[in-house]
Image 1 (cartoon, rainbow, N blue to C red):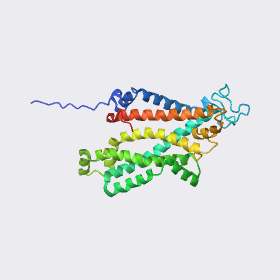
Image 2 (cartoon, helix red, strand yellow):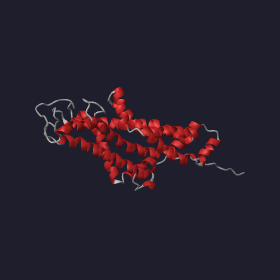
Image 3 (tube, one colour):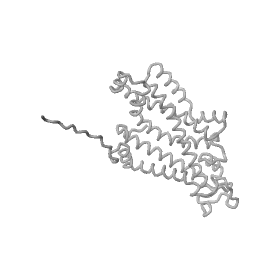
Image 4 (cartoon, helix red, strand yellow):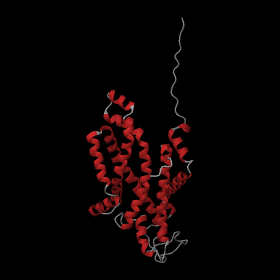
Length: 299
């Protein structure tokens, strides 16, 4: 009498080196502009988190013995017309820029992604209603929304985040809808529907995970846009109000002093340019890694 032995194998965990996230990061760090972007963003985050140790000076502390000073031992990047340390204000502005970019993009994803998923899944009247709402919202630029919100509730960090976040909602909804249109027609979605799986579960389990890559790319690019928009709002005086220093209101206050002390305008202007460029470099690189078909395409 012969006996058969059934061999039971347990699934082995995926080695760390072959994990999809690790593979994406490995490809990302092979792109020089992406490395530059990651370094700049990392340094900005580090400076924002370590502000009390890097510059133990209150950004609003006035040094009347060093008004409009250039680079010195007391003020590494000079001081403004009220004797306030430019480096301390620059780092405080970096904290604001990062909070606005993360908050605005997070709000855009939180509202836009579910709307886009519901639109692409149910289609028909639901799709038309949601997309027309998105079209109407996209007509109003974030600057105009911020001006209206500032008039209603006053210029503040919350106002700026909500204004830029609402401007991001239509783009997030459109991006995930465009990707979801293809996913929606695949066989495994039809099989899940035939098997009686609920609509929310199909959306969360099948459509969302396979549509999230373009959202990641759009979110990275939108962070640079949020930094630029926040600076523009501060420059025209409808953003976060003084005494909180932001890169935008630093530029606004430095503009009349351009002839006397150009460093006051160069420092925040260069910070805005470099950080926005870093986010764009990382966003472009992530797009190339996640969807190589779009490599080299200029939008």
